[in-house]
Amino acid sequence: MKEPKQLSVSAIENGTVIDHIPASGLFKVIQILGLDKINNQITFGTNLESKKLGRKAIIKLAGIFFEDDDINRIALVAPDAKLNIIRGYEVVEKSVVRVPDEIIGIARCVNPKCITNFESVTTRFKVVSKKNVALKCHYCEKITDQEHMVIL
Ligand code: CTP
Ligand code: ZN
Image (cartoon, rainbow, N blue to C red):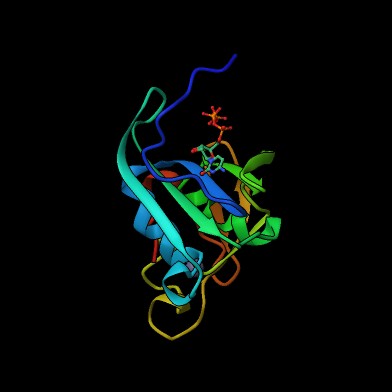
């Protein structure tokens, strides 16, 4: 038998729980997924204790189910995020985020002379390394690595 456990944030009936977000990445995840612009019920907790991350954040989205392409956009700021699909209060599916092959928007190009840094052109990158993420700019071909990555 399972021990009853205390949920820091209430359970949801149907929707998506994004767990293991680094606490420092919570608001970026909200921004990337456009969660500030939807009317669904959203609950989140942050600075929760996590063995793996030190401090983690969790977001619970009632009635929202993402396409892989949409959710994978958070991989740059929450590479260890775990997704739980909830139906009828049960976890029916678990998955992890994966760094996509292409990143549109989200990050800034490291090259100060890049067109994306002085005209209103959306950044666009090919992902050339997924482990230590490295992005190659579609416009200037310069590489932006993890260390120099600035999230827009
Ligand atoms: N959850 C929820 N509402 C439910 C069921 C689960 O909000 N009706 C949340 C839990 O709070 C947890 C996550 O979904 O944050 C995953 O649930 P579960 O697999 O039961 O928890 P764990 O076994 O702790 O998951 P893991 O170790 O895989 O992170
Ligand atoms: Zn560039």
